[in-house]
Image (cartoon, rainbow, N blue to C red):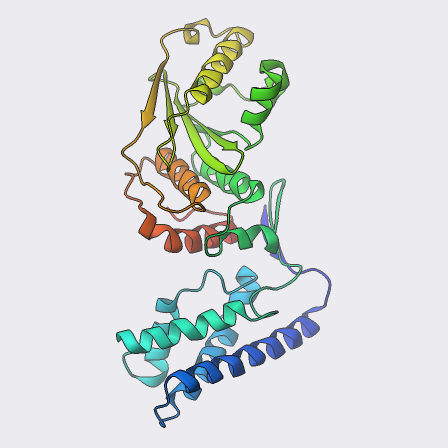
Length: 310
């Protein structure tokens, strides 16, 4: 069961708080635009007021807890209907982008305190969801819930391992994780997805059960040979315990290098989640660094909806 809810203040007080913070953001937005674009037409004030009304009309804050997943294209379309004018022109689009960013940065307006996303055993707070904003590092809570959404989209074929699985395997050996699959026969699956978190970097190992292949994905294209070896030993131990001796041999290891590559120090987690989605759904690896802002917003929405956009 998936749900989003607000905690603490009642609905009326929450609306009052939201209204005040939206107004404060509106004034700062007006000031920014009036100072930068003195046209004398007052269009900046009209646009600011219209954007405020758009946010009031469509429950972005109630639905997502923040304005993080809102894109300027969404607002541009609404403004076109309000003014019957084209706001997709570069100079106008820049204006809209800056106004939205001022809302996102304004204290109180950017987030609804107490907002929660509940899905199965997962609970995401605004602190968790905010890791999808800008170039923040994704945390374990986001990685694990999104991974479960991937798994639940094709539950008979895919098993997603918790992000703490590999570290436990690496430090405690098979005995430390043997109970993690007591209710799952991984050898009946087509695909295993194992996120790897080493210090400050996320990578991924996928296991194709039918092809007996272990593939390492790293958006920084680092060759880490230890991770596949640990997973190979785990598969052998699991095959012995589950009496699946056909899976003791025949495994091959690969490093996937021709996939999307990050060119910063913050998007590794986002790349890993997109690798998971592409692999599970059989989609091509058409992602790139330039897609990350859009994909971060999409993943934010998917988490709030508790469902992947297929």
